[in-house]
Length: 136
Image (tube, rainbow, N blue to C red; front, top):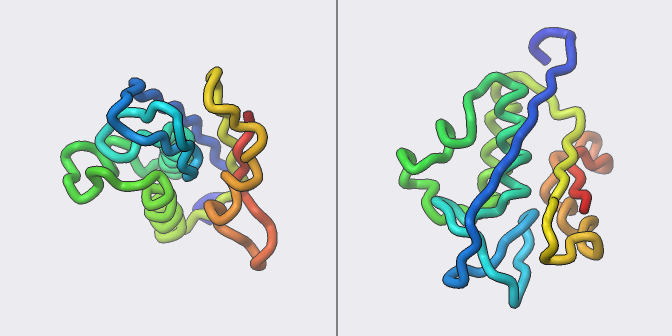
């Protein structure tokens, strides 16, 4: 890991609601909920994690890495953005200690699906320990 001091990044993401898209949040489809508009899938939880990680590593912001100037990311899933962010972080020589994303809103009810949201989205150390968590 470059340097011996832990690095911390903060990420925030907000998108307007739209009835013309399905809602993806924390990498999960939320049937029956209004979606979020955006260049990619509008997954604010995944985007906030990416933003925090990129910031901590000094690799630019979300827009510089995946923004509208990068047409290959148009419509991309939050999970795809997370995978690419994890790759960028690793290629830069960093190891992710942990990430927690806090979802704030009245809908959908995130709490019942928080474990599912984190499963499979987290890089694993030794094949077991998860480093990404979604809280409601």
